[in-house]
Length: 176
Image (cartoon, rainbow, N blue to C red; front, side, top):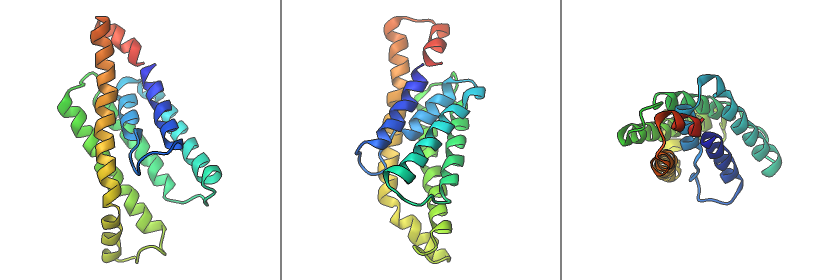
């Protein structure tokens, strides 16, 4: 139940004003992957993809960019990364997964911008470098957001478990 709530919060967060690149998307995907069976991983993937379509076409009235497919592949990858945290909610593991989510999004999404938005950067190594350099301010906020929200989401589950004095089986019910 908590995993679904965090996905809804992350999607809603994208529709309200927020600091640039400061969203709980990666944290929600990591938490969902860590707490839900693999057969349910398609649910947040579809919800985030639908939110991307609504934001792009209807809220911002932009043409649909090809690099969105890279974002969707990244969503799936982060859900799978989250499965590696299942049952092992240790601060170091959460920190590592959150940082991996931030770095991987920076690398793949900006490569997509360079590749598909040919008018923005030349199709050279210096153009790719310029694309990554231009994205550094976004990356800083993304790392902070991913860490803050990841620890908040996983910490919430731990606090609920501690406060209620629940057993491991009850925690599985709470997080599923």
